[in-house]
Image (tube, rainbow, N blue to C red; front, side, top):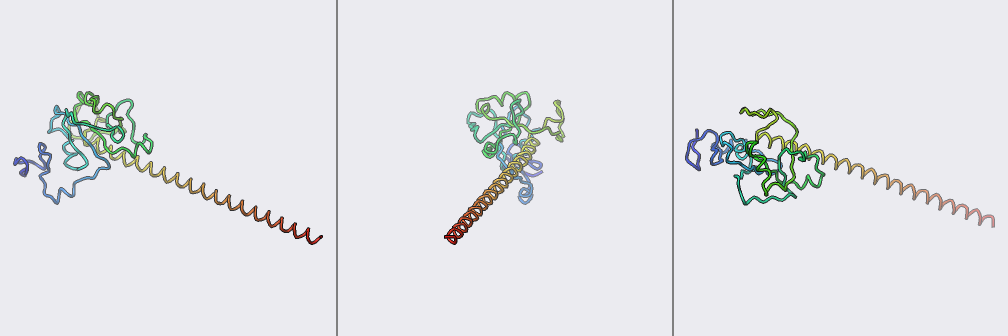
Length: 219
């Protein structure tokens, strides 16, 4: 165990209260992860901090941030922020159009028991946000729960969301390249058509010149 430099208490690997790793700097640098988006984790105080994987998310990435609930200062725009919550109207990331997808800069995740999660998702600061979901995955988290294997821990949910974001991003990029290829081919055909049109005009001009020469010869 190592002393947490913030609270001066001995901790193993990290301090869950201070949200600080107690590892040497050279190890911290190796394990830090860069996520494709920012994640705000709304943390419900009913959730046991010792069972929370949201803590690990923040410790391992500067792109993740914990916000304790309730918090009256929460302000999110539906233009660039979505809520990860599996409702009937929730979309997969690759269901968005490319403009909507590119506008997404932040994903909100709720760290709570399922009993309180629905209540938090309906608060005024979150209820106007579009909902997203991830495709079914089986949890590998060692703590048991009563809902089934497709109910993920917060850390797993963030991981799979990031994974699906990268997949959706590649899908849109491939589609853009494909459209560029079609446009390029269309342009080539247009240029070729214009060239042939010019060639026909040249043939027509020469034919008229020849006829004019024959007429003058007869005169």
